[in-house]
Length: 119
Image: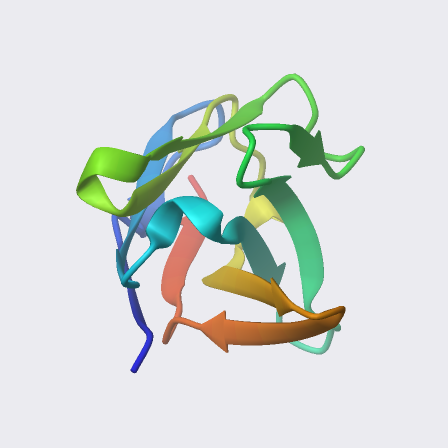
């Protein structure tokens, strides 16, 4: 059974930084594409950043240059380094793991961690 556990959220002032972590209980973590999504109140969940099993990264335009996604396959963990945070980054951040088997994608989600950017 796949489990994803996020940590590192909290309250930070505008311009500050946070580092989110997602610990995954996945047997072959290195084969999964991993991502971070966020959902603000009254809004749809949106992709923030993703990293493929081969290490290719992708970012939402709103966070490019400020956020960095990375993974440590030896520790089954994916990170999201968030710098220059803005109030509009306030949301619940969710870790996602995706496994593609014979063309079918299987998605797994963490429980989410709250990030609040406010003075």
